[in-house]
Length: 142
Image 1 (cartoon, rainbow, N blue to C red):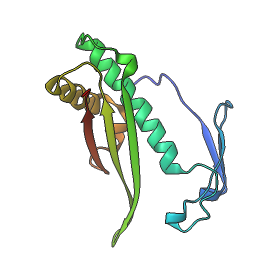
Image 2 (cartoon, rainbow, N blue to C red):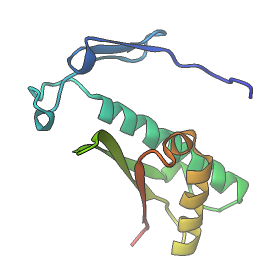
Image 3 (cartoon, rainbow, N blue to C red):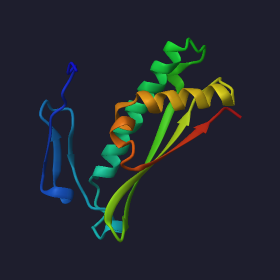
């Protein structure tokens, strides 16, 4: 395996601290959501950061599938909304993810094929496979 890129980030102070990338573009305060017993401050949280990263990566995988399959649709207009749930049961804490995927100008069968293949290709999907529940939803033009 050849490493193409490494992103380095540092979190200080846990969930109510601060996170920054070593090279500078990411520099954010962290807050604990009220639903998790925190103050619900203006900072972001790990679930939002993970959701943003997963949505962007999955969208890139969808674009790659569309390119590979030569699907004639506007790949720049796709979107992914990631909802990351922080959950608790008798075994402790875990995550769940829902990805609402919008693919313009395609029919149901083509759209489902795109998101299925993107889920196989996306590094975040590979990392979460068999570890968390991931629900994929396809949104189409009406």
